[in-house]
Amino acid sequence: MNILKQKNWKISENEVTDESLFEQRRDFLKLGAAALVSSSVVAEKLAAVESTKRASLQFTKTSFGKDLELNSFDQASTYNNFYEFSLNKEDPAKLAHTLKPNPWEIEISGEVERPMYIDLQDILASYPLEERIYRFRCVEGWSMVVPWIGVTLAHILKKAKPTSKAKYVQFITELDPEMFPDQKRGIFGNVPYPYVEGLRIDEAMNDLTFMAVGMYGKVLPNQNGAPIRLVVPWKYGFKSIKSIVSIELVEEEPLNTWQQINPKEYGFYANVNPEVDHPRWSQAKERKLGSFFKAKTLMFNGYEKDVGHMYKYMDLRKFY
Ligand SMILES: Nc1nc2c(c(=O)[nH]1)N[C@H]1C(S)=C(S)[C@@H](COP(=O)(O)O)O[C@H]1N2
Ligand SMILES: [Mo]
Image 1 (cartoon, rainbow, N blue to C red):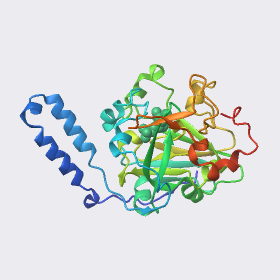
Image 2 (tube, helix red, strand yellow):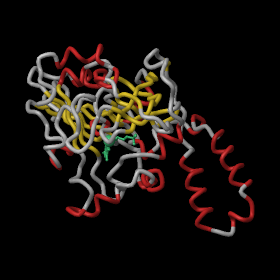
Image 3 (cartoon, protein in one colour):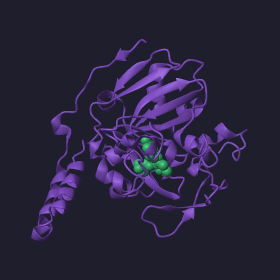
Image 4 (cartoon, helix red, strand yellow):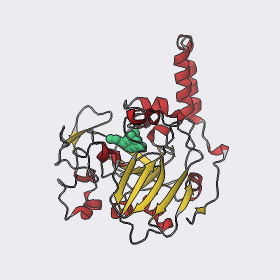
């Protein structure tokens, strides 16, 4: 295989902002003697402090989602689905320190003229990073609005030059039980690993389809899929696969993890659609993190004018 190995840029120390670290440490000191007697409280707080030490990113702002009301960083980084750590949404934030996002490489292979490895540091240092505010809707009925930082997937794929046989794209999450405790459990784990997702090539090349390396101005927290994850805003959240190490261009439709687990409930397309209910619950409404009331779910999660054309001749009840 013809592998193009790119230069390995490192983020320099001075790009790491310590502002929030300092703020948190001060709060920590304010907790005073009462908290200090419990060493587990101290350890937990220190872990939280460490996790805020994330590098700031250089990026351009865009008009995507400029009228949407953002969720807070805390909301988006403490309520997570990341089964490699746990099924419990509060756990990834506490457990994800075992994920080592640096160094990290993504292999691009399959139906491409230029198979390659891309170093994550290259993306951070030399790709045109932009911020996009997107709605995010989990199939379970909760939603949020997040300012992601990254590049379009199309930008990355074009470097590898997909061939005419590339009809789909398959993504794979890192498989490493030292980083992801649930992977140690083998067949007793939460899901069959590694986590796999897929998109049709036109979906992958759509301008909305984003590879996020950061959020809220800084690199991704581990629990949100560091160092690089997919964000497909018109599809249910499970399509937005985290901590990606492989992107393969393929001829056949990939079998994504949730389809493997329960094909009656989860399909390949997973477009947000308030008219097609999940077999066990309605998809007509959603609750935004932090909101008391539910809101109506929008067709294609509000992105119909950007993506509706791709599904014009498809029966969306059949291709769920
Ligand atoms: N590798 C991997 N990717 C994943 C998941 C997962 O468990 N493992 N969960 C998915 C689901 S169900 C959702 S809703 C989103 C959650 O992303 P967030 O934690 O950043 O909100 O990640 C998706 N990507
Ligand atoms: Mo989800």
